[in-house]
Image: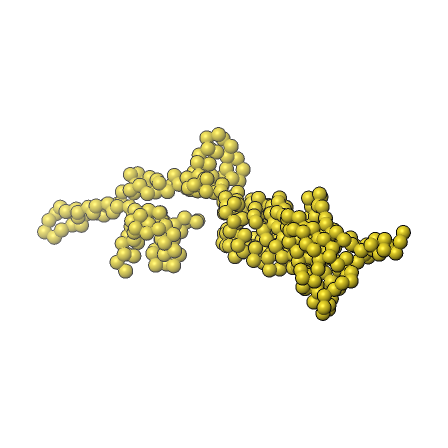
Length: 369
């Protein structure tokens, strides 16, 4: 081999890279310590960008096409190298190929629950996952912040690097969007579109990449919160709780399964209700069987031998007893208001066990006071 052949073998004349991996983001072209020849051909294909790095500093950036590396078309590298009158000798520089095509179907998800402030539950822990599409928009910023000096930076490395950053952006964007956790499930597509304007400014300015779509596939809350939601749904399905309790008591009595403490309580409740209705009747159950008052003996009158009996007074009607619910209907207020007035002593009544009884006279007196 002659001297000229040896010199030519140490010079790089054509720089190109064919990507057939479909998962490469950036690739440092292997120079094997060879110098790049003045006038060498640089070939950049569609969906590729080439970034020159000289002594750790970013040089020129080349888009798709065929470029001849001369002083005229590499001004930044020329300035860094310090060639005042152009260069005629070979030079060394790192050449990075970046793939600018759209990378689709990248998965993201929270490895641990994230804390969110929710209008319904207050502070709640939620998990979320989905997919996103992105492409590189700023080669220099992407190399600096994400890929670094990695010779072959692949998509799986990118996913590991960006997972926590994407989750952090998602949490901040969801907090700014103020979408309740219970409404997220019905608004997945709308939520992803709403989060993009909040996420893209950060990814573009910090990492040199842009997301074209951000899809939320699922947002879940802890099991204890799910149980609370189920209980709330069950209560809403029951409707009127008072009617439901009455139905349960009647059903237990009808089937004869009222044993135990629950059955005893149900029977007592029914018995008290029946007693209350009986006491509400005029004069009570014993009103018609009550012993009539004794008639006083006749008082003799002056000038007459016969004693004229005094007029017999009419039997006093038995005091009409009312329950707090009946009194509430008479007064036109709620039963709770009547109970509160009884406890305060403003309305006179008699408390038997845990049940209040009120006379009509006490109500009249209360209204006149």
